[in-house]
Image 1 (cartoon, helix red, strand yellow):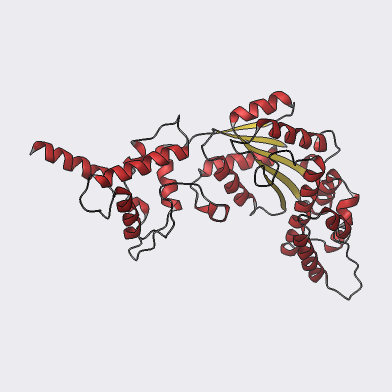
Image 2 (tube, rainbow, N blue to C red):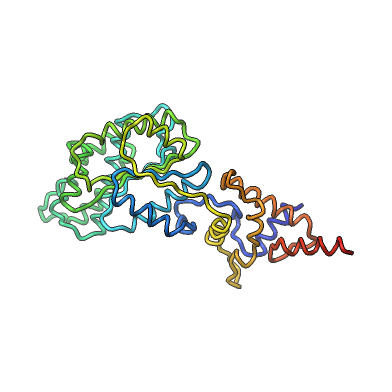
Length: 339
């Protein structure tokens, strides 16, 4: 019955059908709704711009995935930055299917797709990219039309290694290091590799993956400004990586969110559809969070407890209120005891 009251309250205040309030697992497409500290964002950005290897260590269950996609969203707005993104589980490197050849193909495909989008958006020296996208300036087909045709081909060969290398010989004939240097030398484009390792990922698979990255990049004659590697990972897993592979990482320890920050994330994440322009801050008491807040728990674990607190609250009221306020319930209980 109380869960039905909770669903009714969400409908009453104007939440969209399917909203998982109060849970916070955001999707990449609405990641800008996350409430990430501007100071922390600027700190990570500064470290990436000045260090070749950066590890961002997030406590298990405290929003590494949200932070990763938020930083991706942030870097996408920086000019002349080529982002090569790998979500370890999403990109299929979990398990026995991973190989160095698979990784190299995915890197080169992501490079080609990222570069073609930059070329379509930025007024760069076109003739220097003719080699990259196999273009002959005969006057029959304009350069930008050719680029759009190549982007369509890239979409067709995302999972077809042979078709990709046949149609994009530049990436077949050059190794990754040569591509990075060419993009920097010709266009001042810096390539940023961003890796997300979810906390439940198999440790041996991650170590194999890092070993492959190290084998491809370390020791190669790559211009210092051409390459940045950024890892979003738990601190426990990073210690194992650091023990296995000697590399000059710059550590960024990302703090757990406070209960006030979690409340701010809720306010930014959930938008109400009613005509009063009310926000979650007008309708939901932050004490629901502070009451169960525990740094030893995960963020999702805290929000499950918050949901249980809401349901328990609604079980103790006869009518569902528009505003969920613990102080009202406490006052009512005190009044009942006095009577």
